[in-house]
Amino acid sequence: MLYESLRKELRSRKYRMTAQREIVLKVFAESGERHLGAEDVYRKLLEKRYRISKATVYRTVELLSKLGFLRRLEFGEGVYRYELATPDAETVHQHVICRNCGELLEIDEQLVKQLVKNVEKQTGYVVTDYDVKFFGLCPKCQSKNKSKADESE
Amino acid sequence: MLYESLRKELRSRKYRMTAQREIVLKVFAESGERHLGAEDVYRKLLEKRYRISKATVYRTVELLSKLGFLRRLEFGEGVYRYELATPDAETVHQHVICRNCGELLEIDEQLVKQLVKNVEKQTGYVVTDYDVKFFGLCPKCQSKNKSKADESE
DNA sequence: CTATCTGCAAACGCTTTGCAGAGCG
DNA sequence: CGCTCTGCAAAGCGTTTGCAGATAG
Image 1 (spheres, rainbow over the protein chains, first blue to last red):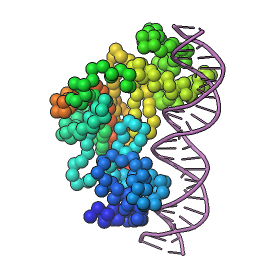
Image 2: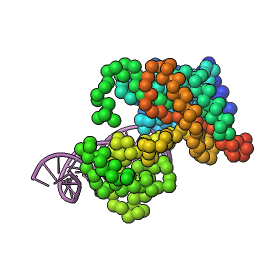
Image 3: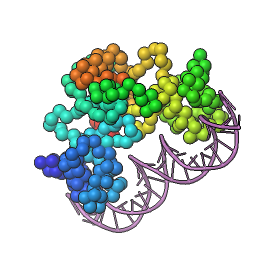
């Protein structure tokens, strides 16, 4: 299971398995929320009475990303967020974000895949990963908001 | 010209035209580099012996974005960058970024436009803007790097 | 055992804020 | 002249780092 493969991956790269690393990974595995910042993880651990230092959380989250257990995201808030990277399923998700209410919707990966192909062809790059975000108004806010769009941003 | 339209836009929104605002805009208009962080702008001003406070630079850059003279970008470095938003030409650009050497290439906007259409259709959102980044290896680094891909990130 | 990892606290870099004085309109 | 803007310095926030002691293997 997950922690076993963490152990294996760590060993194969000459890192050590520690309680802290397992616990941090567990936060992601068990958390309902999907996009956690390092700071969020730290707070969650405090709530659960785990005594892991903030520095370790930051280091761990980065390590877990490097190992492929987490994926680093970014929504232009000035914070890095992370989520569980389930390597089996295709769970990369690109988003449409409502500028008004903040609603966040995933978009069909297939649409993006197509684009990636074309980009590779056009640029000669090998694309290993990507980050696609669309901003706009969700259907709900389209009907509501005709006026206050100006002062808000 | 540019500073005139800045003056107008400011007045129409009840802001004032100040030397600082013009100067900051000029930095973008005259700078060769395209993606400047607020901190970069501040340093450039220091070099040129302009005595504008950092706080003003931050405030100005934000204001200029709000007014549509600048556009805020973001490349996952934990810094906001800005560029001149030339409203006439279609200068939105999406990028392919090399994970190895950092080279940054623009990709054809048309490719992305297509995707936007589909996303709107599928989600019901009105997409006002977007942010599309691809990461991978540029042709040069593809040939060079067969080995050190691991430790680097 | 010893190299890696952790905790702590301090440092960091970017960004924001409060306030008193400067200056645009 | 009044209201906005600026400069300054301090604080804020997320993140990183140096170091001594703890711990995995």
